[in-house]
Image (cartoon, rainbow, N blue to C red; front, side, top):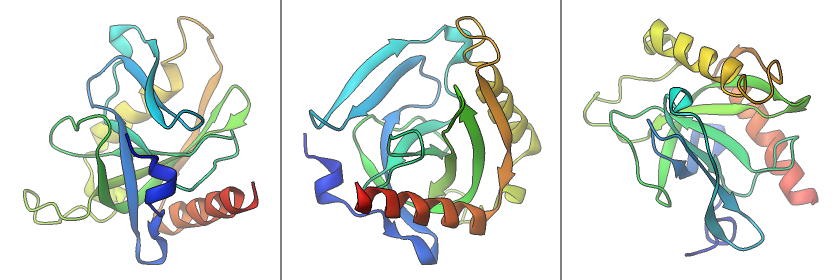
Length: 176
């Protein structure tokens, strides 16, 4: 497998297009993570089935969030995406999130070329409110069976807030 952090850039952040590598397909309870040291996808753990991911899940290459991992991305798509692929994605917002007292934000994206929707999703306001409630509920509770209260959704941010967080994560990557 190629080392995504070596062959991909974060993308065209200023124009709201980023590269995203898929780790976890929507609906999966497998917590698959990019292992930066080995440059492979690794099964970290199996979550309870009731906490399967409500969206596809991945990361933006050459970024570091405050938790020391690549910046996470929640990928809104009509179907589960395959682990290990990458895509160009349009930034539509961000879930501001804290996990075990560490900032662990999730940039929310859609495929940059989504002909099924006619590229109609451009902001969080274009998503069904029920989906946003499901995302918020998932991240507030997915660790409740093991570590209750260890995750907190701070709220949703718009495209500009997401781009600010991406730029800060690129700076962290470049300074490591």
